[in-house]
Amino acid sequence: MVRVLTAGHVNWDVTLRVDRLPEADRESAIRSQHRSGGGSAANVAAALANLSLDTGLIGSVGDDDNGLLASRELESAGVSLDGLRVVEGADTAVKYLLVDDEGEVAVLGNDGVNEAVAPADLDRDRIRGADHVHLTSQRPETAGAIAQTANEAGVSVSFDPGRRLCDRDYTDALAVADIVFANDQEIASLLEDEYVGSAFDDRIVVVKYGGDGAEVHTPDGSYVHPGFDVDTVDTAGAGDAFAAGFIATLLEQCAGTSLGSDDGVGQPEPSASSVSSVSSVDIERALEFANACGALTASEEGARSAPSLSRVTEFLSTRF
Image (cartoon, rainbow, N blue to C red; front, side, top):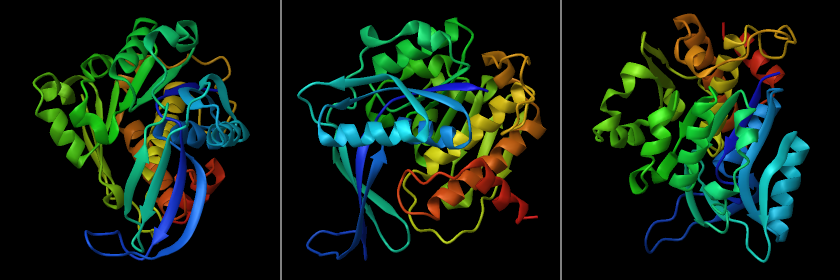
């Protein structure tokens, strides 16, 4: 079974369904309220666990009730919490997600202690022992230390820096990332940087377009998937589910197995070089599977609604 370590934010989410996203000097009506775990690193970890991958997490929460709830939810999903730091006397980050009738999302929140993990707190042996590391928004120096440790050990790295990309210097992590995820606005910011100008030449770059699918650029060519038409309920977490689906499929193929099978026992473990040189067939399959994961998540309420392997398989079987 492939082992994936995710690193970044662990939050507690309060999702408020509203008739419309609020504007200045206007009022919106709350239709319903839903509470669950959130944070990109935690969302990807839970989504990978749903796909039957052995998954661990590096992150931090406070010792308050929200931190306890977030931890219990991840543990129930099958995520290893050995790398989760609990900060005494501190508050867990809480995000308020406003979701309108079209499924569009606006976010309010406080960071709490979701960036309490510093480079000195890292268990380097745990990072080296993973088959793949997935980074999300966090302290740039921590992301860089994790990425460099993984790279030196031959562990492949993916990175989805998220909304705060423009405000933070992730050069060290990006320098060794084998796979970079970004939406169309974030990729524009990346390409303005001289370093990332050659990103398409030596790595896999995944550009997410939400309900309009995604495209993947690799050293061997580019591939596009238009996405799947679903009744959108809530787009929160859909990008995280997409990333989990892409990573899971790619790593399983690199290991010579199929998702949900035990055929990979004794097969070579994936490495950074193997992830960077997969064939077009592998990429197209990963892109299709990832889009299915994102679409199914967007059709449910809450950021932690990523589908199981059987649900994705059933969904794809009805599309052809």
